[in-house]
Image (tube, rainbow, N blue to C red; front, side, top):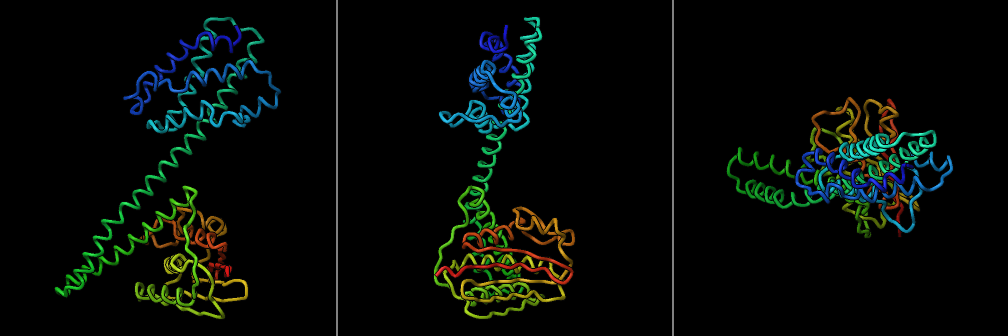
Length: 371
């Protein structure tokens, strides 16, 4: 009997073995009934049987074995893709998902071989069956990964949002304590709380912005008439106060007015300068230069220190990345500062680039005026 016919005829036995194996995938399977354990297995098997019965070229078979089979326009999701989404929502992990297909492959071939003596023509069925299972695995893994990533981003986004209320309470209480003038010890403790609260708030800002970009929403901006000299000047003054032991030089040249989101640009500048403070030589100044031209404004932040290697430099704007080995291991941050800065520049239809050598490391931002 051909394998496609066997699968359709003995689907009950195959599904029983599928379910028996699925019950071992703990803890996710512990609270699932028989219907949920079998999930879309019948549809997956029907699709495999249909695939086996459909004539295909060698090239089409090869593409399928690589997981590149073309989708059906009438079906936005295959049974394997829907199965993956439901497994992800039920708490299965990626290894358990793939294990189901390994067990299915073994069960079908074992049951078939035990009942029938194979002939040479059946070898093609075995190869075609393996290709169909490989395609189903590829579809499932792709959708499973996307579902887990989406759920993780939503969770982090909600976490970042919900942490703001208790953080604001801490900051307000610290400000109240600082205003009491209840003695030097209380005032110093309140100042530490205020600084720590500001750092936590910055981390939450980066976390929320990161999740917006991962969910496909991008960085939200509200453009208005902005004098970048004021924005940069205020930001640098705040950073000088927060880092009195570091020298930050500022130079503004030409007309630096345009239509941008001033708050977002303040965040961009702060991230770049903090990065320069963190990784630059402590005995040399951080330099901030803003230059206006007819069509755009160019912002450059430079620092002295060891050069960044080309591999790190090529990935420096990727999210959740850290600086080179000589970085300050005690510096706070999620590794999102430069990524957020690049996304803010992108939201303004601008660009950001980095260069580094033994003399200095520089980050250059170009912002069109958008008048």
